[in-house]
Picture 1 (tube, rainbow, N blue to C red):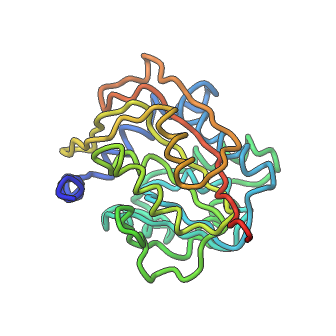
Picture 2 (cartoon, helix red, strand yellow):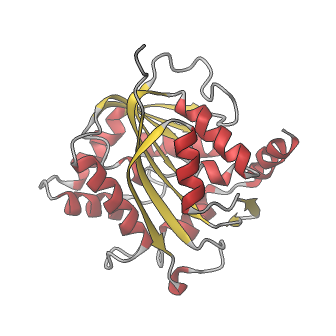
Length: 267
């Protein structure tokens, strides 16, 4: 447990603005190329929601960080979206975005891109306002607790999303697997989980903070999902090209998973 405490302490230096600059600005966010990592992530999410299988009343985003891109394709399919993060600085960034404060990160290129690839003819301002309207709660979370949200949410969610969270806050493989098991309690049986994360990464930078990451392989992720009672519908990965290895981490690739929590077996 002491190593988990150390992870929590290391995150006190996390700088949201630096993190966004490193990962969500060019060169990693180049919308002129579908082969770039950010458009790849957005397409994975858009295609998963386009199946029509993932919908319901509530979606919980586990470890939102200071980002909202992972929720853009979700907002048509849920009545309510709950964002969560361990850090108050990240929750504050999200609240400012929901309130439309002018000094925040500019997500408009992301929203425009998602509207374009979804092909529904939706205006980007409409999608922006729709997500702001549905993002009704921004809650603290600790994925290392058996009840990550405590008593803040009464009913399990219809779906979960999580991007670059579990491996980034776990000091080793067993704690990564336990964190996945813990967040699975937030999802109803039969519910869907869209998970994006880093492959074989050991650290990343966010300003003065150098954050340790547990390196996981595709096989590690699949094994952890199986142990937590998921059926995998889709698993794909992205190999980080040399041009996007810019010194802010040592990631080798990114994985995307669409998994479904197995229903409770009847006697």
